[in-house]
Image (cartoon, rainbow, N blue to C red; front, side, top):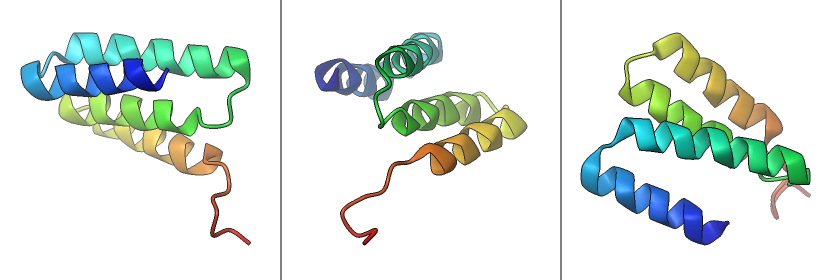
Length: 78
């Protein structure tokens, strides 16, 4: 999974192929949800970036909020 995420980031940064990025982000979210993987908040961050780069501001804000609300506690949360 991390390898696919890295490859998608590299592809976006080198091509700015937003269609491929958005497809990856949707697939990543679905994959994480199906596995009940606690870091699916990252997928919302990927969707945020797609919406932001496309100028879909309200959608980007919704994804950013979903990412923040679903982020699991980290090592500094006590």
